[in-house]
Length: 352
Ligand SMILES: [Cu+2]
Image (cartoon, rainbow, N blue to C red; front, side, top):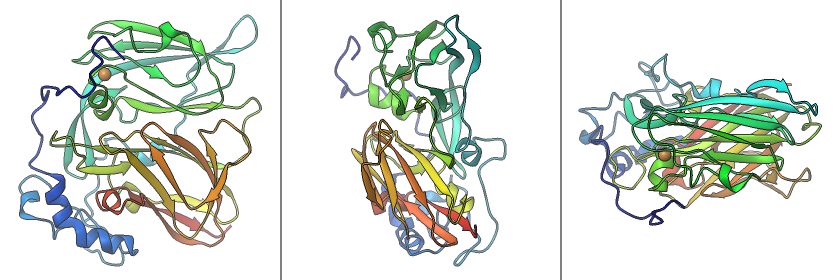
């Protein structure tokens, strides 16, 4: 906690609502579409959507079972969830005198408008310009040095989950705009962790986009697999304390348009981090398959074999699965409302 421990304090709205979209109008307009999508049809954000959506939201279509017409995707130069899912940042690597790896990172907090659904922009606070921030990847025992420069308009920090000294915790050393702070600690324990800003009001600082995945591999690594990072998140685009859009890796419905690829018989490993604010519980369900759950990724033996896993705020798990059949396999939050508001996607599974 910071000096002001009241996380529920009402923050003066820092930015004007960027659109007239409310969760209620989207749900009202998109419910039929969402239900159809859960049944396997393709969807957009709903040309059938309410009038309230029309003035400001350019409504996309999807090609597919029920879709036709032009496909409006996110801006080509914008954040690409497909690239993000497989991008692991090992930092600038050198050797310490004792032979261990030193991994150096440069993180810059910047305010930036990001596109969270086609045509829907959100005034984010970012690490290095993207939401989520870079996926840090290292091995247990490595030394991490993260130089954090705050080029944003508000005070921020980076709070890493994992072991580290109290003065590296990103709680008390608030970094004001224009200032720099260097975090340095050893990466442990192995597992799937996260980092996020820890400045109050906390939920607002996290929700604005200051979070990312932090993967610490066990010594010797994990078995070979096709790996994807999934940071499940949401956006309160009208600042009423409720999310209007939900997603995997920021862009609503992205993996409906751009399915994640896999092959029958290969091992797929998902690093799933729940960065959602305002909603207490999130979940992931994979259709037509079951997966091994490694809770927080801190043990090498699976804890559970299931097809649906729940995530509290800040919770994360490594999931491993092997597809038995080719085809389009849906995954989504099992909170149907979240799915209808963007948190769904496909695996495109080809013959091995
Ligand atoms: Cu912050």
